[in-house]
Each structure stands twice: as structure tokens, then as C-alpha cells.
Length: 554
Image 1: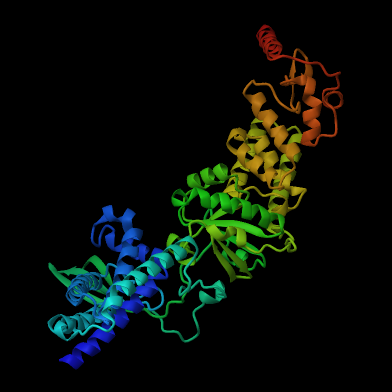
Image 2: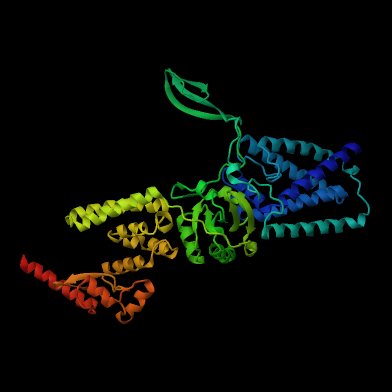
């Protein structure tokens, strides 16, 4: 019995120390696993989810302390009772998880040694047997000398564990066991090798045949049965080969950009799985780093699982000068244990990973900015739309036909916005970059898309003069004073420039916006009359007079 206790003591202590250290290296990852267990449909203890990280740190440190006390023979009664309580609970938990297929990986050894639910249960049963040996033979657990040093060793280990946990939480895991470790090529990690086993399924078809239920099992094909179909259940026979990286994709507005971005040579990813849970201090650090990265020639994008509202609020709050794309939340949590955090990619290979606390350490040497890849198909489509728009106006087609054309073109451009965002200079070239603006300029949706137009100009995708014209047109449609004096109208049988806010300084604003002509020169060219300042009241009076004239003519 003494030999059996000694063997069990060494084996159990080693396993607890190994398991504890692996999870202590990545307490955030263990907390994600606990959240799964606490969630609805497993233990239904959702009130514990906010405390998952605290519980995770406590459990892994306690696990290591038990391993140490077992080796030392310190407080043997407390140690074996604690070991027995933990293993009984986790044996039940892994059985429940395996039998009802609730959690596919128990997280016992983190990402270093993934176990299936039944493997986890088997491991816990073996541990339960060994701990029962220790429990009934605890009188054979002899302490290691010197006894006086035991409490100090336990205290030192406890302090070291707390310090290590704090370090990895404030930075990143010291050892990265995940599929997205530095040096990994994401595209290669998603590939399935030739000859890899394929997934096998059994389909159990249930029919009502002459008043009796009949089940027929096939490998997928629909059975030929004379009866009424009730339902079908699918059973996994063989899960087949699953590549290490199987849930990574970069999308936006239902368009997949994964391949495009994995071909970039100098790409910086800002990973934030949930923007509403991101730390404000983190994005302040990220803002400073990304501004430097963009100025150094890097392409910067954000990856998140959050929705458009959270993305818009975050970009506005922190004045972020890059776009966010959508990626699966679990994949983002796996890529980086920081929310937000930084990942540097070179042609799909992970070069560096940083916690937001270390954003200032990201090396950002000057690199050559990549030449924009013009989308020739989209450019040709927009050029065709431009020709149709201008031909219709030059030929002075009837107003009703023009409205139909404008409406059709607007729908087409809106679909482009959903798919690509604003099609600016880097996507369709400088000349074609104004086509989408022109279509919206002629539509009734200026107010809807003016923010998008402004954002495109801010990024250098569209000249600001177009923004100025659209802003003036939007104000004029609301019977408000324009800013840059770009819009004219007719009233009282003559043309004139629509009223301008602070007309005395309009030429300064025009120059800053990029216009070459003064308001006087512009008025002479467009209206054919010397520039005259009108007020909104005067314009309204002209409109009223025109309406009265129309009635008298009738």
C-alpha cells in the first residue's frame, strides 16, 4: 500500500502541476472554457459568467498549490480531501459534458493537449481511482524534510503564481499553444492534406408506414420508402480530419476578403472580438500605434465580431482611421488573448502578436506602400453608368424618364456601397472615383450617404471638392444657407447663387476646400450674371412670386 500511495502521489501531483501550469499560462483561455460550462444548456449558471476569469485564476492556482502540498506532504488531510472533492466534481462534469455532448473540449490542459469529452472523462476516472488510493492510504503520505520550510514554499509558490498570472493577463501567454502561434501561416493552417480522412455521417430517416414508425439508415441518400416522411436525425460516425485553423474568415457586407488580405505583405490586424467589452485604455494605445503604422506604409484593418453600431461608435469615439471587418468571435479569442490587441501579418504568416499594453513596442519600420489594385470590372460598370447619366442630361430627356434612370442608378450604387464601401480612387481609379458621388448627388438620398462620402474623402478616396458640393446641395434642399457657394438656382426669370452662410469669407472656405475660382468668377461662369448676395427671405419671396406667376399664366 505504501508503494501504491507513493506512485499515486507522484503521478497525481505531477498531473496537477502540469495541468495547473498550462492553464495558468493562459487563464483567459480557461475562463472562456468556464463561460461555456456556466452557459445556458450546460450548467445554467449564467450569473457566474462575469466572474469566470476570477474563478479561473483561483482554480488553477489552487490546483498548483495542491500539487505542491501533495509532493511536500504538507497538510495531507486537507490536501486529499480537496483533491477528492475536485475530482468528484470534475468527473461528474466531464461525464455530463461527454454524454450530452455539451462541451467538445474540457480545457483540462488548455490548448497544449486538447481532449475529447470521453477522453477527459476517462482521464478523470483514472485520477479518481488514484486519489481514492491517496485518500484511504493518507497515513502513508510522509512529509519531506525540512517540515518548517513547507509553509514558506507554499507561500512562495502562491506568490509566484499570482505574479505569473498577472503578467500573462497584462501581456500575452508566455507559451502559445494555439493554432495561431507566431510563425504560423494562416492559409496553410486551413488546408486539408490529400488523403486525409473525410467526415462520415449516418442519416436515420423516420417514416410512417401503414400507421407504424419505420427508421431507415443511409449514408446520405434519400431512401425509397412507401410512406410519409416524419423527420431525419444525423449521427456523426467519423468526424474526419479538421485542419488546425477552420473558422477563420475576413468578411464585410457578405463579401469574403480573406484571400485578398492574406496576400498582403505588410498588414496590421487590430483584433477586438467584442468592441463593447474592449478596454478604453486599450484603444487609446491602439490609436497611437495605428496612426504610426499607416504613416509608415502599413495597411491596417480591424477584426471584430461586433455589429455595425458598435463599430461606428468605436471608430468615432477613438477617431480610428481604419475599417473593421467581421470574423468569428471564437476565432478572434483564439488568435489573441487581448481585447483589443495587435497582430502583424506578412503574406498570411503571423510575424508578431502584442497585447494592447505593448502596442508601443510594435516595430514599425518604414515600408513601401502597396500599389492599389484597381477593380477593372467595377470600374467598367461605373464608367458605363456615368455615360448613361451624362447622355440623358445632355440630350435633355423628359423629367419622368430622368427620374427613373436616377432611381435605377441609385439602387445599383447602393449595392456597391454594401459590397465594397465607397468605390474610391484605390478601387476604381481617380477619374471613376466621382461616379458614385455623382449618382447620389442626383438622388434623394444625399442625407443618407453624405457621411460615407465624407469618410471616403477623409481617407483620400475622393477629392474634398465633391464633399463640399454635396454638402451645399444637402443644405439647399433643406432651405438652409450653403457653405461653399457651389449651388445655384432660378427665380424671378434669372439665375443666382443660393444664399451662403457668412458670404464675406466664402472665398477663403472655397480655397481651403480646393476650388480654384472665387465665388464671383464661379457665378459669372455658371449663371452668366455678376455675383449678388441673396438672403433666404429674398429667395422665398422670389419663389412665392414665381408660384403666383404660374397661377396667373394658368
